[in-house]
Length: 324
Image (cartoon, rainbow, N blue to C red; front, side, top):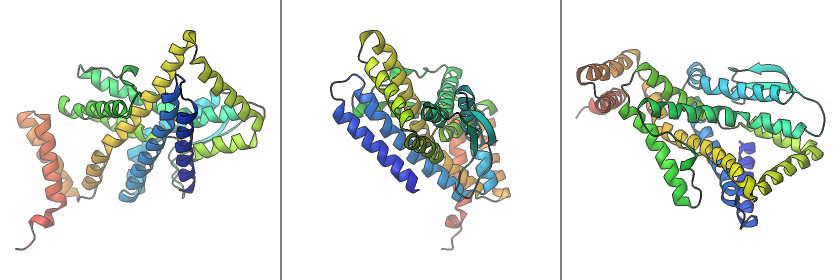
């Protein structure tokens, strides 16, 4: 928890420093906004995982977040292989006493590029899970003939424009419930979206590994900072500005989608935990009654309403059965 506090505090300070020191630069808004969105992503991810860990037993917790955990760790492993590291161990489902869900162990050469390799490996899940998350959301939109999400929605010129982008993504997420026919494929896509939203956030171990490597290898840290500065200054030149801005827009799109879906999934996760608290017989009726409604009228909105009414009636039946 302490490491999370320092990480988030560092991101906020980085954002403030970027905002005040980069006035007049083209990429100023992007550079200042990315750390803030990372902080929000981390807070939402930790809140949801902690809530699920408390409300569910270990087996259901693992099952619920398995896809996000698998892709998170595989992203580490693939990035390690690409950067020339030797992967010596992968754990996808081991929940240890510290709450870590999985791990990838690797070794690498001790040279000036070790910090760069650790940075790429540490942040690989953000791109691996993030790109898949955007793809799944667009897959659902294309299935329902909706508008595809692209970097065109990214507008960081003001707080209002950022909030509009987040609201648009949340709206697209919930539209899937109203537009879909609740077939198994649609339900699977929705489940994967929630799971990958959790998997996209870098863990405390990821950040700790990157920062500790930066402290131990000052030469490698200087190389990484030089690369960052080069990318930043290339954004100021007309020939390369378009491509650098596109890169930052993709990073922001992934962050916006991740933050939006994590926010939108909170009510769904709450409903899911309430369903798991029911007895087996009550679970049967909670699913059977909405299914009968769906088969009778084939209306998704009314089916969801029937599910909510049945769920809360059975979960809090003591309110209705209280003696008068």
